[in-house]
Image (cartoon, rainbow over all chains, first blue to last red; front, side, top):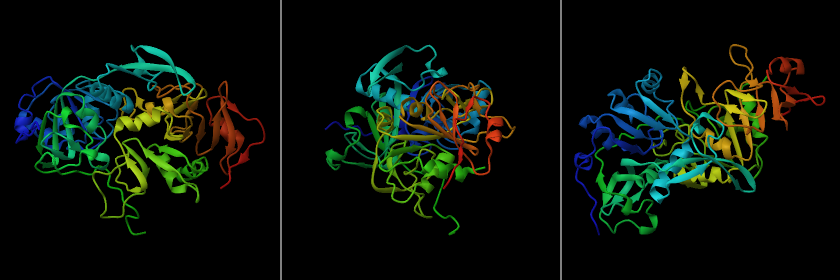
Length: 239
Length: 218
């Protein structure tokens, strides 16, 4: 079996350089590649174009890279949790492309499935449709307009999984799955950080979410803060 | 006049047994608290859940288990987890029966705006554009009049659109409306203690009142 293991995050991202396009998995702060983000801060790579559903919060997740002005452009669907982001965007310092969440997910999928374009009704009649090819199709007995959207191209995809093996096979846990398996398929180089790295042959092949063919480098992350963005509980005061 | 919980309680009556339902952030989330006994529904959360349950008890929060509002939640028996492409795949394929979401503005043609105020607030559309472009049935939960006293039920939306001609029904603090064929807000029910005249004064778009309109009941 081909061994995809690298022994440190420094090695995994050694050739990630200025002005690259990177994908970063996660939804909010859930399932983000914490070790890779910390390494990008340490490496001081800048001018990055970052494809990620959200932009973290001010002091965690991608918010760390916004604080240090390492991101030139964000491609996201929702950025409401990050004040620094909103300031940099409104002042024009940061270039931002907001796109529908399903479009973002499916453009990753298309990249991993070898399909150069997809058609989606999301955004028809809105500013998202500006400059895009529109075609009419019938689906489910209803004819309507669809926008043509292209597959993403990214130099690196940085994803986080729960378990992985040395062959690069990945298993995600709960809703930390989100965009991770889609981005894992879409990077020219995909780097996976996992909470637990096991020898090939340990994981049940029937349980693999991302087959190792899509993963170029895998390492076990050091520590995971797994910060909770909105801690909500039932009857918080016992009422 | 209804408060937020009153709006949520009224919308809960629109949820039918056996439905798969996506609830947006804000008032729509509260709808889950008022689904009548005996009505079995499955809640979809677009970050990749079918069968979303209530918040966890204190101490049982799991950072890996959140809803689309980034809140810690639980899973019910029979739930499933999937990636974001499949989540929007089932939305696009119209497997989700009902979408309930908030809005800043709705037009009398059923257009909706809820993601951007140019130059002021840009949070993004999240999954809203995908949901409104594909859902078979869309109910909007919103305040009809903003803090400055201006109606948000308009002839045309002024803000950047989220979707066109997609809203079917609207529930506000003042009443229940459907978008009439050919346009206009058809008043279906009044909130308790609210007159048709008051509603007319609070609706900037065309209001259609076909008959004597009942007060809503619990």
